[in-house]
Length: 119
Image (cartoon, rainbow, N blue to C red; front, side):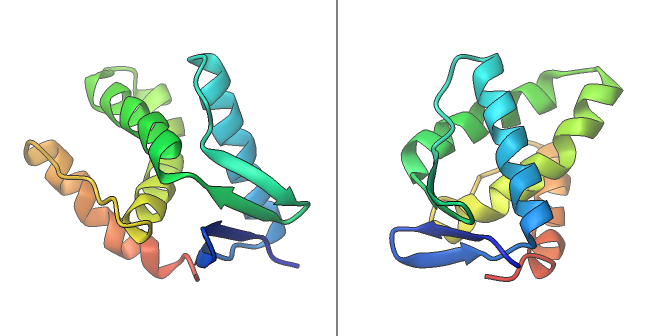
């Protein structure tokens, strides 16, 4: 069984149920930790709708935290969630623009990560 993530009526990701639920759980945890909206709304048990504005705001904060942190464990935990989130934002028409070499190197990983994310 798969989950469906969509923006409006457009499918942006169809992960396995396990991967989809883990991603939503991590998104809720990150949003709650900062008192922010997730930007991901549950439509049905396995269908989620992404609001690019509020989801983008959450991802932007996490992106900045990732690059400002020197905590290797925190960055490691955030890495996969952030790559997945950046792919979803790009598919929603809101790609990230890196501002330095470290960010450019990170963003280069997005295209490889996207290949493992069927839409």
